[in-house]
Image 1 (cartoon, rainbow, N blue to C red):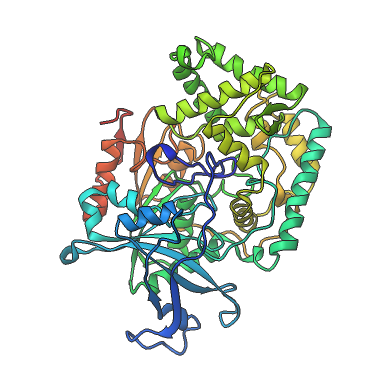
Image 2: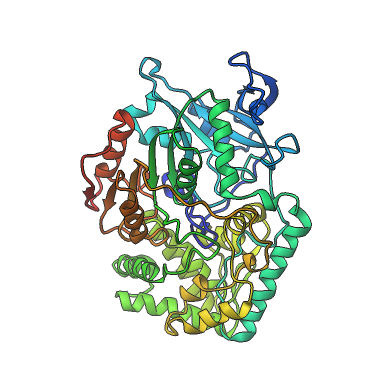
Length: 527
């Protein structure tokens, strides 16, 4: 997850959403595709099955293009994808009641003689859109891709699926705590207001946003596609969704790849706690890269000088909000911007982040600043309602999946206990959020099964889904295998980072269904 629980890697031209932090704007999308609930001519519905009309619904596939400005639709059309909607119950305890739709895209298998089945995708968040992902995933799969129907699914309340939007003035509930009790109290009021808005504007939907209900939707999708079993590729939060789905619906998966692995014991409304050291490490590695390019960015010639520049920006924001274009950036926003800048370990992402920090430094020095595209996108995300739907859905999922402490004093104590020298990460990871003011979850969290034969992928320096979490999951699943990418501060690897070692191992598994004989260690080097 990321500070908005989602990271967007624009450098590779896809829309990977990674744990909590959004690093770029998301275009608002409308529902696409059509579906009717008439029974398909295949197998007749079993009367005893309360979900029969959903499992046997007829899907009408059509163009994914919604209009001339729909870039996602254009990419899907160019890749030969089609889109549809699947109807699912809002409340699975009352399947004859209100329904909602879940949006799908699909690139059909080209090697029909050797077709394996459907590969269902989830690219994280929670709250990240996945409908646009089949083209780049299909490309990353190389020869194996032609043997699958590659299916992108926008989970319930996300993207082109039935929307959940609380009318927020921000795209994320995540903020730094600021300096002192008065700013923490303002953050508490801000969080309470976000929760109130969701009760007011989407109170009929938020109780049903859980990962367990999303997993139930996935099984309806499986049945509606006519598949006895599905294969699954989940990134970041998508790894947790995969853990839940395979537990709730054993025997209905074939090949399972979880990339950026979440330890289910750490997942919940405060899942960022414990990532501070990894965040500092990623910031230091970025500082090394930036120092070597001081002529380009002017942030300092050494790691320590670059880090001092970042600290100076935070100090200036503590004295008075920085004016960056039309935005006022205070000491609660600067740490969130830093958090958003760290999840992708590549020159494009590093350069975008360095330009953003350069803009913040100029603002801290009192200069007029027109923010770079990356920084402008982050500030629009954090300080306007442009991505209200994203933050609303993400928060609803997290709050529906687990309980958070209700007493603001518990968060204040955690902040006071945190490293006083850490003004960038601990104030974000320990801070109060809207889940403190949410209704209790309708269901208990899923106890994850311990016998899943899955392929796990994680980088050692992942600042979102910690490598230690992947090791914990691997130890709990003796039948799994772990692919480790060493020496990279990278969140999500397959098809993204450019490691031939990782990509080849994943594709071999997808092609053959055979897990590696042993765990695999991959060096950082790109091809």
